[in-house]
Length: 399
Image 1 (cartoon, rainbow, N blue to C red):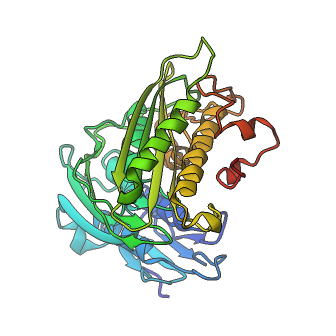
Image 2 (tube, rainbow, N blue to C red):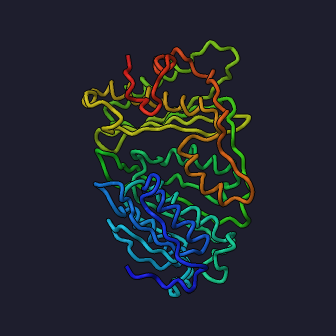
Image 3 (tube, one colour):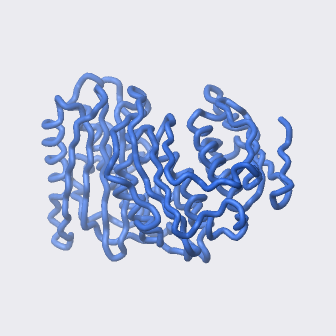
């Protein structure tokens, strides 16, 4: 691959091994975002080389890269599906630099809509306040806003749903100083799935306004007591009522603690009909106070590596495994005692590096009990007898 002329960029091309650590799409998202904000051209090689059946760029990666290319006026080589290497030189395409960024973008891709939005946000939010971004070129105006329509999965395997974004991630970003004036999700959305059993796009609509001043350092280390628990589910229409009743029974059992010191917990439940045959999704989101925190845990069904095959044609068992698995998942997140769950912790890594001053979102000494939950509930009783495997919460035998 020929080297891009990076004469307009600061410094030499940075070479990155795309197979290091997890070696997936996260590395590509971080690398291109940092490249754009630091005005450093990069060359990524051996992309996903440690994944024998899916090496190179995926189609959804190419869409994210192309969108960032337009925003950051980058020149790019190698941005095709299955490409093992990529060159990305920000702020060096003279033709794009001379044009105002589109105020409304309509993007169709595969995979999760949330992942694409997460990939674009760092540059869109911080471009105006990053000193390395050429202010005479592609920098965004203080009052410029962007409407981003993303047509992709909104309920996905191993990716945040639109409801997780709305009830967990965005409120957490608000805590660190990125509020609704800078990032919001429209109520206008369309259900879409990306699981092992269904792949068709839905829609999310986000409004983004670049930060007008640097983001101060932030510390979100501990959570407070649980004050709200919200359940959002999507299930086949024919089992909606049964699932809702089962969810009510399980949550009542979970919160029926005799601990007189446990605070009252406000519970909200929404059970929607799935638009895809045989598809289930459940998110449990907890809000705490003093300190305020937002944590969530969600799963989509089917997943071959998470659910036993024998429950496939048994809706009652699917509901049992899904509900109890998510209860165990949110319990594990709350038991860590941190102010963010593991999904948001990963997402906030970049925001910690971009903030001005020391930032932290976890502590090794936060583990705490969850007295608000009944340890003898059917969902949790087996987990009170260690050792237990928190990485395979759903596949514990349910009696």
